[in-house]
Amino acid sequence: MGGGRDDATRVLTWAALLGKWTELARASVAFPKTSEGAKWRKSVPDLIGLQAITHALGEFDLLDEGEQGLALDRAALGIETHAANLVELFAEDSEDPELEEGLTGIDEIDELIDEAREAWDLAAGGEGAESQDEDGAEFAAESPDDEGSAVADEGDEPGVAADESVSIRCGAAPESSGFEWCVEAERIIGEHPADLIEQLIEIGFEGEVYVPSPGSVLFRGEPAAYVSGGASMEVVELVESFVTGVGDARVGKRRQVYRLTDFGTGRVLKDVVIDAGATPPGGQPQLVCAMKDGQACAVSLAPKWVSEIGKVKVEFA
Image (cartoon, rainbow, N blue to C red; front, side, top):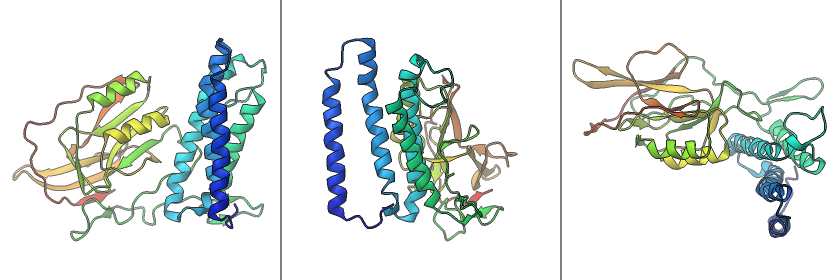
């Protein structure tokens, strides 16, 4: 992937592309005032987006290793979002009875989609590859070293597991997975999601959303938000603007934070982070469902007085 590029060459290449994209955007204004012309005008941002991602993936090797997994997840989400938008615009007009799913039937556009997906495959094949079979096929599967629970020591930062989960490296989230955000700040306090719900309904989001219970305190490393069911880039950006103090989105299954308390003294014993489908360890769940199947869920207001919670031990089961 051309590790020998110098900065001047990269700047010139991006400048040339920017010039072409600017010309395309300007030309779109002159498209006919017809339904067909409207489709092409609407397609411009997605066409440019696909080309930008394809070019950026060509420079994937310039990223630090620690940034590559997230970059792949972001690129995959962008490619499939742009492709889906273009398919929605043009595929229904195709006369090809054997048109492949995920393509538009317009050769020029389908070539852009294929090029972006091939660029992603090429980048993913070199990222984190651990072994190759006899035919040269590469594998980049990752998993925690220890399948058991990881507990933060008393002297560690709050909520940091000894072995943090890693994002799934794939072209799109599996049906059983979505996008998760984890706390990056020392702690965050949950806000009521009314505005977020309203914005997601307005753009037609039909999936599910989990956010911190209003007034709850979550610590570094703990999951703080989760979306699934057609999470477009717009949905991701809305969630990230709502839940402050978190890192970037990562692909994964939904997890829950359970807060275990000594009911005799009211003292918080620990938090347990566990897959949402696993048997609950008891305690109070800290993430609430704000939307289900695109419908708003009832979310209680934050308590009038939010008690101050000190450092909490966190287990990752």
